[in-house]
Image 1 (cartoon, each protein chain N blue to C red):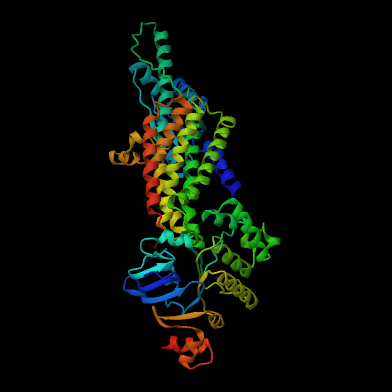
Image 2: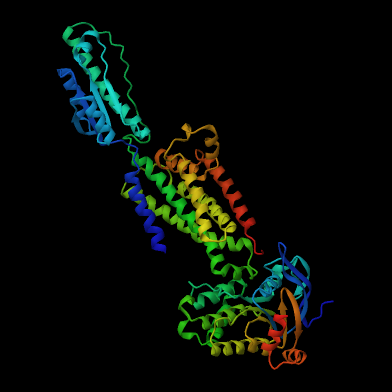
Length: 353
Length: 243
């Protein structure tokens, strides 16, 4: 069992960290060039040069392009209308048609941004060329922003995802193991034997928690090593602080697990309830979707999500190098959760029926 | 009130599950060092009654003193003074023989030295030397039951409760098991035992027979047979259980 507990989550860490990317790559791009001018060809060359687009197809007509989108062969269609070059040069205003398959809304949004950026930069170059040819002083009021990305300069999504996924693994393993544990003893009958002994409730609960607490910290340790060695995630902050926080955090999860255990009679029931909480915790943790964009009521729910705080702390300490004072709010909330959940676990564990 | 030789005193003990009366006002007393047989058909309420006496199930009504402690208010004190062996084998299958003994010895607060001595004598008595370090799960049922009984006695309890200890065990092991029970009783431990085997009922000092939550008969096996004018306990049981 012990090798399974350690090996499976780490395989997940390696696979998921590589797969759970927010980058949209390999966009299947199609175009309809009705203009056949130097400008239109130059624009399409821009797309061909981008690393985000591959499978660039030239469609003779809109109908054929639409069919390809329907079949899922093409994600994006750019239509360059007739007289594009003429309009552009003479009227300084030309329009392009863009069709994006938006079944995956998030991806469509990103594709739109990429394409707009490419067109904008093409636009700028062209304007410069135009002004150059006409030899007129072009009063350019174009404002360019130069983004500066802090804490993750290269916008490497792995730097962002790996700490988050590690949080999920530590949580899942400790929750499921502790959630199943007492129920399993109920099923086997050993719990009854324990209940007939003069063992104190707190002794029993501590005895049950301690091994899982050690396992949780063990998984964190191996996970951090993998983050460093395989993904080269920066570790700016103090490792000691991270362990200190995790120590308290795992207590919260174990408390939840034992609480579930006390209220269920079979491992199936316990598993079902543990999954219920796990899915809500994961999807509302801010790991995959930003909490800021959730409706107000959902944001209130996330305040009671321990995973949210762990993800925040993990990223703050690892990527920003936050210190004890910076994570104090999260730390205090987590500590409160730990006290409440374990209080409930001890209270709900009854030696009598 | 409390007589020193009475280790269990029960009066009007009742347990309800909703509308169902599982145990209906039972009363009896058990003497120190006695082997008390607690008989009854399946579903008669034996296990429920035992669970109230060992402090893991709260009675609805009545009075019960076990080892001098009240089941309502002093359940934890009772647990210090009793041993219990359930219908289900309840040692840890994934621990070895030795680990199980150490674990339960530890729970009862025995010192390391005493646990060590106990382990040695217990393993010798049960002739488990060869399997000391084997997982308990790999042992035959009869061996497990004997081990389970010895572990229930590890803290020298005043009373040991045995809930169908010999279910599914072969006749030879059953005999050995009863030898263990006699040995414990001769050392002054009171044995409270439920069984479905009527030959085992004959081994008890006194026997009570429970029918539908009530105790219908309580006496020595000899007197019971005389009273019902039958040859053996089996017939006593059949007469009572059939009503």
